[in-house]
Length: 205
Image 1 (cartoon, rainbow, N blue to C red):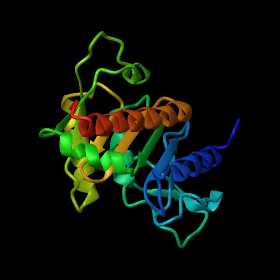
Image 2 (image 1 turned 30 degrees about the vertical axis):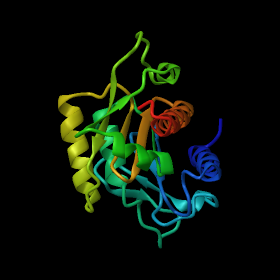
Image 3 (image 1 turned 90 degrees about the vertical axis):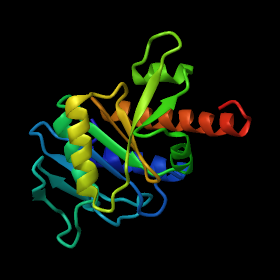
Image 4 (image 1 turned 180 degrees about the vertical axis):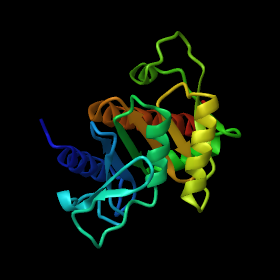
C-alpha cells in the first residue's frame, strides 16, 4: 500500500501537470485511522513535493507532526477541517485551482451552480435520468476561516447533492471515502466545467 504522503505527492504531481495546481496553488489532505490528517504545507510547489512538505493536523486545528519545523499549515486547513467534521466517511479532501473552475463562476446563480445533466454526473453518484444538480457555491472571503464556517453551517443544515463545492473565483474542493475516488471526482468536475465553458461559447448555455 502506498503511504499517505506519497499518494498525495503523486496526486499533486498529476494535478500540477494538468495545470490545476500551478506554483504553490491548492492543497490536498488524507485522513488517518486516528482521525488526524496529513495536509500539504503552505507555500510548497505542488509539482515538487517531498514527504517533508506535509503537516499532520487534528480536527481542532492543532499541529501533531511537522517534519520541517519551518513550515506552516496550508492557509485553507480550516476548509479541510470543516469537510472532515461534516462528512465522517470522508477520508480524502482535495482542493485545486483551475481556469475553468473560475470561469464557471460566471454561470452561478446566488449560492449554487446548475450542472448540465451529462453522463459524467454518474461518477459523482447521480444516477437519475435528466438530473437537476446544483453545486454549492461559497463566497471567497479573505479570511479562510469564514469560508470554512459557512461550509459547516450550510452543510450541517443541507447536505450537498454531490461531494464537491465551489469557492467563487478560487476553485473546487472535493471529498471522498478514498484517495482514488477523490482523484476521480476532481477529474470529473473539471470535465464538467470544461463542457460548460465550451457549451457557453457555442451558445448552448
